[in-house]
Amino acid sequence: MTKTSSFSAPKGVPDYLPPASAEFVAVRDGLVGAARLAGYGHVELPIFEDTGLFARGVGESTDVVSKEMYTFADRGERSVTLRPEGTAGVMRAVIEHGLDRGQLPVKLCYAGPFFRYEQPQAGRYRQLQQVGVEAIGVDDPALDAEVIAVADAGFRGLGLTGFRLELTSLGDDTCRPQYRELLQEFLLGLPLDEETTRRARLNPLRVLDDKRPEVRELTANAPLMLDHLSESAKAHFEQVLGHLDALGVPYVVNPRMVRGLDYYTKTTFEFVHDGLGAQSGIGGGGRYDGLMAQLGGLELSGIGFGLGVDRTVLALRAEGKEAGNPARCDVYGVPLGDAAKQRLVVLAGELRAAGIRVDLAYGGRGVKSAMKAADRSGARFALVLGDRDLADGTIGVKNLADGEQRQVPLAEVAGVLRDQLG
Ligand code: HAM
Image (tube, helix red, strand yellow):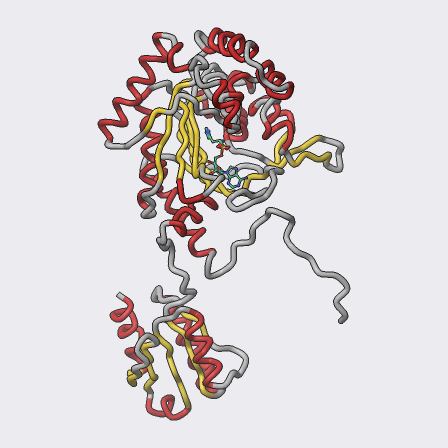
């Protein structure tokens, strides 16, 4: 067959291949494990939804919705979008299935791919992987602290240390509109360029996130939400900080934090890692008071986070730490001849049933190439079986680290391996 074309993955879309995929799985499962310990139940939601859900839930003026969505018409001419984030879909499912009318809070956890048409670079992909949680229906500062502590424990459980938690309060609907006006008035009095002035009119908070030094200088004395919180938002924030202190979760208050999604109110946070260059956010989240109602549900608040699995893998590498076990198997069978292969195939089945990870050299390879494959598999032991061993009822167990080999009765090999592998 002639090769007429070759394909590569779409730009900015990573593949996860062995052995590196072991790190990815370890990070994803480690972060999910932290959520499981706090009683979050698993949800598996659609990869695509009605476009309107994200427009309404995430906010039309956000970059995510206005510039980055993968939106297309399906064959029935419905506009659908590959999910750019998880919170809106979770709210849709909670409302649709009436979970908000049951026991509160509804605590849900998810893991999977999300899609944003961003400019790809190190740590920024068009298909990105998140682990997220949402705790819906209870407006309690202790729950905010729990959500944050779960993320912190997830990162630390993987061995990550070089990150910091930044948090702030974005106020509620009794103080934010006034603050927005105040900020807008301040910004429109500055000699800003046309584009930035337009942004100040549309979404003034976002101007505070401008990284250009000249804009930073101009906005250095801008009014801050934290100084204009309502009494109740202020009390809520102080209690969250109190709980975090009691839990021993370190944080820094960053009153200029701006998130890329519009639904946040009150507690809002980001985990930042300094070893990652420009894409330093390894996770973020916050409370969202109006989102459920906005999507047609009850007037319930919620809080959650999304943690970036890809960036957490990069952060661990930047710290020189390993996650996961890249070895494909513990034991690798090397048959010398057909009769030996038949016996090894059966033995492999028995060992697998005993919980030992086993692979074999298939395809009639020579010993040398089979031993190379054994080394490459990451196995700790090779099982070498020839006709003479078969006649004797023994098998060679070779320690691949030090090369030492000893003969073991075939009937005992499972027990010997189990002892050796611990
Ligand atoms: P987000 O801050 O947009 O929040 O994304 C969460 C995390 O996903 C980021 O901190 C980052 O680690 C990772 N991430 C985002 N975009 C990319 C990308 N292009 N490439 C690689 N990683 C990326 C949310 O999505 C909210 N739904 C979180 C949330 C849940 N808030 C409340 N509940």
